[in-house]
Image (tube, rainbow, N blue to C red):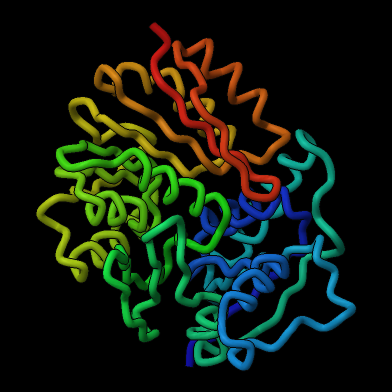
Length: 314
């Protein structure tokens, strides 16, 4: 049986996304698990009490545990060195965010292949959007827009605040005949939501080949492949033409790199919604948007996360 190395890093809330991205980019198998006690309690309270046990009283709600798994092969040491180097580089820029040492544990495949599923349950977002894991049952209400997916190795279950912000924005901005670009599609959840809300055409892009395969699989299972085109590419590369709505749920630093290309990709009256922005980076993103010829039209928040709805500044 194949052996794996479990790598777990405890970090502050504001660093969970960048830590997860570093672990994913190092070749994490079956995705990255984020154990967020605040998110767990939110989900637990929305479910029948007996389905989830409350957290122990001594749980530190300010600490998030990010975990990934790597095969014990000839590339393992290179992967671990890369992870440490990139985490150290980020901490030099934004300050120390790791809490305690990185933890390592050898496991077999059967120990972890389904472990992460306990953190993903049926979740209602906005007025009508319902995100449903493929392994759970749910009886939809009349106006529900149900998204069934299996995140697999890709990022995006719909429960993280940054994803929720985009889903709520899509519910407000997507109408029949809307064209949508989804930058950093992950599991494909945002592209699928746009299609379910009536968008006529969606182009989804991700730099990660695993995410592209996962998104294509979820989209095909949902019967939405006729309206959603998924490509591997960096930022907006791979998207031809212009869109009515562009969404990006990625790191603030990457959003800043993306901003100069947005005005040229938006139709007149088009909108760009950026998420994945920790509150401390809001001003930097806003200033970069203004330099790129965009105006922030609306700001939405969940906890310390910010979503920015932008339009071209005329």
